[in-house]
Image 1 (cartoon, rainbow, N blue to C red):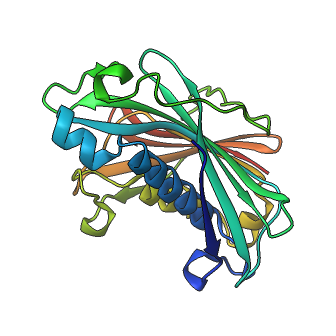
Image 2 (cartoon, rainbow, N blue to C red):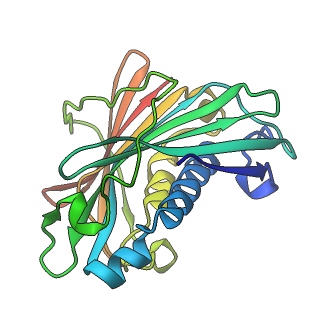
Length: 236
């Protein structure tokens, strides 16, 4: 199925130019794909209750093509674009009233057993042949990371308001840690962004922030001690 909603560009989704912000776009994508999974009967609450498992986003890449303005209405489509033994990919397309693509996202998910933390086959958490795939209409590829840690910028702490229903730091909150290393005006130059989620982090933990640049591409990393928590790619 293709799950479609209409959303209005309310103030909480906007940046300093009164346009859809990067964080606002990630929020819309996360909300719409969660609602799609609910319609398919495989959302986080159902998966936790029926299979003692949890869905985690492993990768999330967004292309920013056109910025909707304050109070604009947009149409948001989410659908399963690929399935493998242990991975599920969901594409989300945000379009303006004329049907022009504003933001396109690809999100990769896997399911983990809550008791053991081990990856489960998607067929073990309700994803069968009944869940159909649809073709993508925008080319999008996940990035590669060189893990350059020569430039440490700061250390941040996971606080109480960063925590979600699984009691770890919510995916959206990591965006704030990463984007806060940029000046406000430079955020408007970002054309594409990927978040790769390597590990969970929890309240009270401290994350070191590193940044490397190569031309118009930046990589920002969040590490907890020796462990990567987030790897991100920002294309300007």
